[in-house]
Length: 417
Image 1: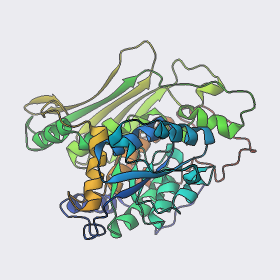
Image 2 (image 1 turned 90 degrees about the horizontal axis):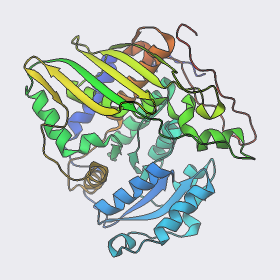
Image 3 (image 1 turned 180 degrees about the vertical axis):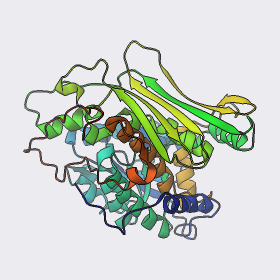
């Protein structure tokens, strides 16, 4: 567990001031690449699972001036699976954007270091949440533009590492777009703007849902080490995924922060494990959360997230105002698929043909909001933003070694340590 120095501690005001700078920068064009405007941006994918693969194809589908030249993952079958998929592409428009050989396919715990040694311009960071702070910090050191999936960390120590990297990255004039795709979805953009302009009057309360079924669970195969199983069955362990409030519900929490143009100052929560059996494959995470977040102006956001099979499902955000209420996407018109649009916006930012984008602090704010909610629920305590952000809590093992044991932690019980 890492200790926090006085220099590393951040007050809510300092954090908000840093995050506000990101919004100001949106009107500018990228100082790093606007002058150069490289004809073709070379792209590398780090993390060859389903979401990373999807992000890569979204990048290729949405942009003309890009080509994929490198792949990396901790597991060889994942890397070669994407490589084979790329080799089988028949669509002429996509095929011309693929320029990769097996020599540019990197495997292992340190594969992220190898892909960053190539001459890629853009790194798609599509790995698991636990390692994103380390990978993004390394990409910043390598001076790469970044697309980073969410959440960007699983604990406050990781958030602070990510924040430091994001600030250095922005100072270099490089671009970063996060996988909070609703920020690039026309319906949401127009709706949030109207809400902020008073469409429902003064905002009095918000509600956020990610109520769905269990995404997946994988059985342990013969010969699998602890580490391999933790990473293959990753949505079962808090140190890998952050629990469902962080890994998935961050989307809805991010929308609420966007509406409020701020983050909560405190949280109190509850939840637990209602149906998951005490088996290794179900890990140590909860299957339901209910959290009350309070914003600086006294407005409350009520957050509900769960993984219950054969139950009512809903993923949504609601704003309740003095003149009515609305969902956060129904006041706008449909646009381009947001999973593609976010990559279009990133490339336009890099090439200087669109607004400069750096969403590092923005996505860190929303991830930290979700982490604060989880911490409040796990402990049964009311937590302030400063207490949560400056916590020593560090969940990720210091080293990853396939020969070492990684036992499943106990399921958190409120009132415990």
